[in-house]
Image 1: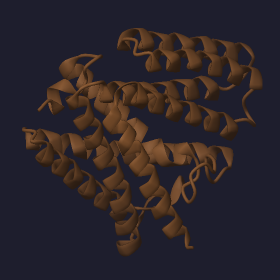
Image 2 (image 1 turned 90 degrees about the vertical axis):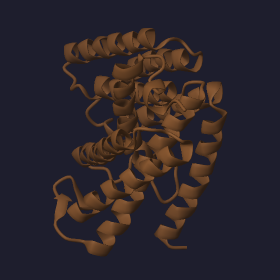
Image 3 (image 1 turned 120 degrees about the vertical axis):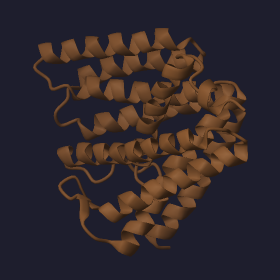
Image 4 (image 1 turned 120 degrees about the horizontal axis):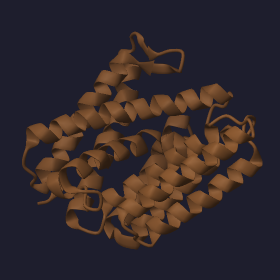
Length: 271
């Protein structure tokens, strides 16, 4: 079996599971969001273990567990955000006192906000379901289109020092694919404001590719190829969710401005 075939099979199986849990919503999806965040933090610690202390990682893991427990139990957004902020500052101060770099608190903030954004975007209503499906469609289509357009067209590299395989043509193709996929979800769901949603899809597509590049930079900075080996053909959870979680945070932030911290999907995705 070729690596491409393995990637496709793994992606299909993963998508079916994720979409089923997404449809269920509620506690099931909050557990999924928390599991993604926990797996990403574990991989972050493994990647950076050469420059971080186990004691600092354990402290951050304990504080992250409190954050994820709040997410799973359905606590309001603002208290959880406060815990993330306070926990990050505490771990940062402890690391600086010990003469450590800021990798551990950065990982805590990155993964905590990732799980938080996914959970609160989905919420417990129909608007949340549409919002998450819109997010998935944009990010997944961006990833797929960028891969195939980049391989077919080639051309100048997008960021050769960070990710040599990515091309500018792939990035443009990814944006086009992401916008089209987002509009397709909007049309099927019966949403309005297509121009606004197309713009949001464009932003999310760009941001998801930036998130992918960020994770590539983190791995290159620490001399590793993959964040893990949990997902056959894809590597670790960070390798698969890097663009998704950054786009989720941006979409959540947009939703907060329009609808509030606890119901970020209402303004754009209510039917």
